[in-house]
Length: 373
Image (cartoon, rainbow, N blue to C red; front, side, top):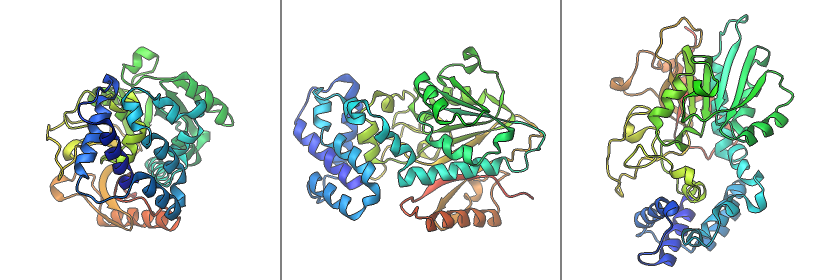
């Protein structure tokens, strides 16, 4: 997918020629295509059409992602000239089903949503039976991550709030998850103060946001708003990315929200240049050896710093790969870092996922709570 995306980028830049007139809303996308073309200028690659045919034949499991990428990649130059409506490429005929499938049915999405569900279930282990669990999902959208979470939650004790900036998604979710009586459906714009939108400060034990916080102007402000919703000892669990993927830029980069950020100098960044979550960008310029910091797919979490006797255990980040796992270097560990035993437990979970057919998912940041002492 990455090689094919690079071919589409090179062909679009070549077709547009020198000094093209690019509409303002697409200039960041054009700059990204130029960067991809420069990074891969020395690579000997076949035409995009030939690469797409070979990919479809060799990897039928990515057929859904490939269809969307082909449709968008073939029209990149037309979009950048303003001659093609990108929304018609993403939602042909107004149909949202194909794009929604990328969030729910693709190999990477299934794996990462599974890890997200496992993380939340592990975090709630040991929760007192008599105490309700208050959960808020921010930017729940099509409900792809919601479905994985609901399967792993003790819904008889959960008060779940499904929120999105669009009332359309909330209405759709009400139809889809109507069998769950304990779900509340509300709108929420996390870029603004939640309390001004009718939410109680510190009213949730767990706040989940899957692939949504990157689409905000100021990540630090967004995290403050999300944190303000956490009860003492509560957890913020994020599913976000930390590395660039070209094919996602060629698809979602057609929309203005993908380039909405105004708080980074080297790209849309959740963890910029190995800095802590929400830290300011270091300003490191992009280079061929060190591409700009940009997100793709990863599970991250951040705990509320307020003191509490909450039974939810603190989470910690480890760097992990399929089949292997190691704690962070000693100088990066916090006092709740994983022990070798706990790291082996995470590795075993990933091996089980690999056996289930999720072999295309590579290095990720997985958050999972330590085992009970």
